[in-house]
Length: 113
Length: 112
Image 1 (cartoon, rainbow over the protein chains, first blue to last red):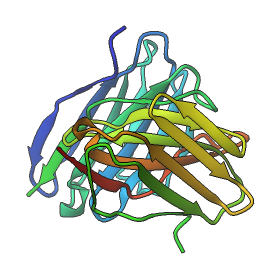
Image 2: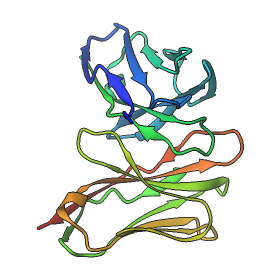
Image 3: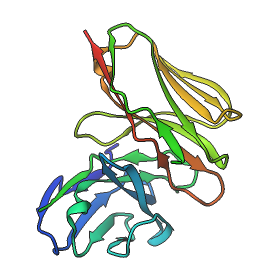
Image 4: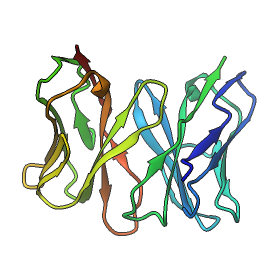
């Protein structure tokens, strides 16, 4: 069974631009969560989607948004990029969220210059 | 005070050593506990998932949870150079809050 895939793997953007990251969950998984990983803050929860609805949200500004499609694929968008948004963005999928095990993708490394 | 505290290390041990990795937490609402392993430039990989206090063993790995002390541990027996990675503890509340709260990770190096 294929794992979680994320595209692109690397991105370089300029301050003020916006970016869209994509995540394809494991087949059959309907919950997708997004996390930001930085050396200073570690892994922090952004949001979780299930059946095309945002079910949980972390403490990030509104510049961070996401959506989920009917095939459970998910996208995350960051608008008006800031230098501090440079991070590894990870998505994780699980069968239905909740107490199910979460499996992570390899991440998208975003660098904002 | 952060909800989850984890010593970042780095921790360096010789091959074959027993490794002990630990996390403490402050929020008694955490009910489910996980250990992830993350190799450089990779996503975290789930190693252990536990709920109740006590020990859970899987091969060379043992996860220990002490809810009364708000303390969890991961033991690695007969450590191998391939175990060199960052180890992250993660926790989850019960109910409808599904987010994982992570420790910052401990960097482990096992020397041949």
